[in-house]
Amino acid sequence: MLRLHYCRNFQEMKNYLLASVLAFILYVPSFAQKSEIGVMVGTSFYNGELNRKKLFFLPKFAFGAFYRYNFNNHFSSKLCFLYGNVEGNDALSATPEQIQRNLSFKSVIAEFSLQLEINFLPFVAGDSKTPFTPYVFGGFGVFKFNPKAYVDAGSYIIYSDDGNPHTYTVTEGGWYALMPLGTEGQGTTAYPDRKKYSLTSFSIPFGVGFKFNIASGIGLGLEWGMRPTFTDYLDDVSTTYANPLVLRAEYTDVSAVLSDRRVDASESNVDRQRGNSTNKDWYSFAVATISYRIKNKQAKCAAYQ
Image (cartoon, rainbow, N blue to C red; front, top):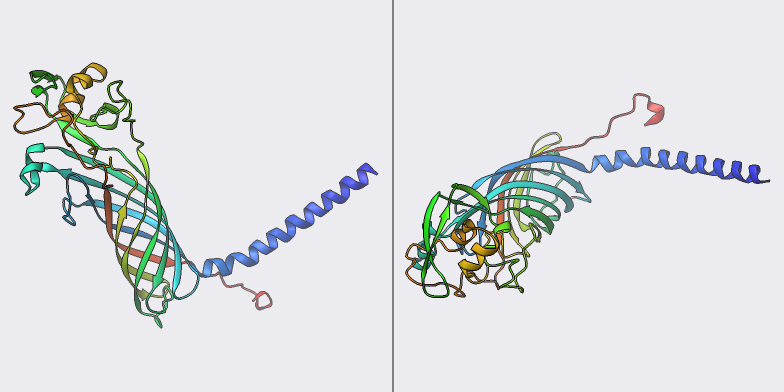
């Protein structure tokens, strides 16, 4: 009886698997008919403490790839990967306070996002009967970043909270990752409320685009999207200046130097405003796209059409 029960279960399992495979085979063509794959190339830039308002300021090269599923001729979903670089530099600002602060950074941005697109006009990818459409999009993304700053080797004088100047030495110049250095006192015993920030955060992509068909199954597009984020440390600048003596004791001289890069360091800056923690950082991608609609393979025998 046990063997008979086992055989019946095994047979049911085979039937279920066979039915699942057949359903998948029948489903894939209709799924593929509405699918597109594509690549993107363009530029990326950042807005935050080191670039408050300027659009397309210090743009950097960006690229990516996407998969788009068209629900109908007005609505699509898009799974997207984008990789770019962003940069900020107080020295290039027109604001005297920023020039005096003299902070700078660069960071890579690697983003995965899921977006919903809404076409203003009926549009079928690669179909000359629907030549073009403007569209809007919005979604949710997760991204990795890693702010770095450059410092030359040498000696630097920084005033501490005791009102006296102290000399800090950078023995090896170059680019330094800023998060491990805790430049605003993150992770130190003197600032227990300041935790080290994560290098992974979330964003809300939204923007506009224009896409058009150029050949059977092939489309081009232009797209610009902004990304408000859930972090204020994309540029490693958020709160107030930390005590450089604490940074030296618990990290290194490099941490103290990269924390306070003022042009005129004639007095202590400890506990004074370094950034604005109430405003999160943004980044943006502006790209050109090319896509290919995945077509069904026609059956060779008419009986299987």
